[in-house]
Image 1 (tube, rainbow, N blue to C red):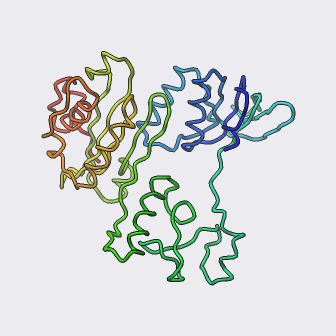
Image 2 (cartoon, rainbow, N blue to C red):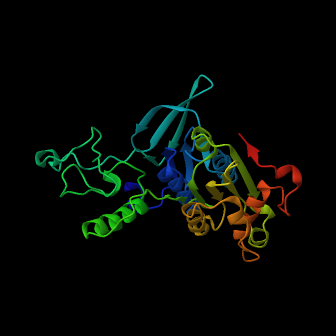
Length: 304
């Protein structure tokens, strides 16, 4: 969080990392006028989203360095050295931000003295209701295993409070959408193609580019909506989007997965026109070769 406590906007910023914090920092500081260099091999995104974000970063002149970092130095300025084609190349910036894994601040609380089980990394194992091995002690959020998202902590707080009040609580783990506040934003919920294959699904995917969408034609922008489905059961397994309104549409994506939607369930609702919501419909239509704004050769959903 120290990065966002700077009192003056740096002229240049070096960022090491590929997670949400690193990508959002790169996008935000560049938008404010800082010269940004991002050191990241892979961007920890669904492959199609990663490819599009890299293209966007290049267009925005955010320098992306995928070579291995060999040395970091900090004096009056910061210097990051990488190995490129067998030679060392140095990059300098006024500040350096390195995005590291969050570590639970639990090791100094003395929990072991009251019998609460702790993992080696400080995580607190809990059951589906947030209950630790001590029945009267609960834990929620980042201090417990799971995605480190504010929405998870909020959901678990409500669930645990209901459980403590003696109410019936659904212990099923919900779909947690991920939103990146890049420019344009990215939203993702459910499985990627690789995750679906590894889970044993026969994968079918449909993708619709926003440059063929009416609202985007009017307002500008780029990106796409991508749907992952199981070809045999028709179940929707994941929905991913990069483009304006992604952070607004992700609620609809998440609801579809929670309702165990099938392909036909997302074909039926009529979206407002013109709107980027139509891109979701056309990404579904592309699975069947029915998208009216894409040539036929781009509509056959990939299968694996």
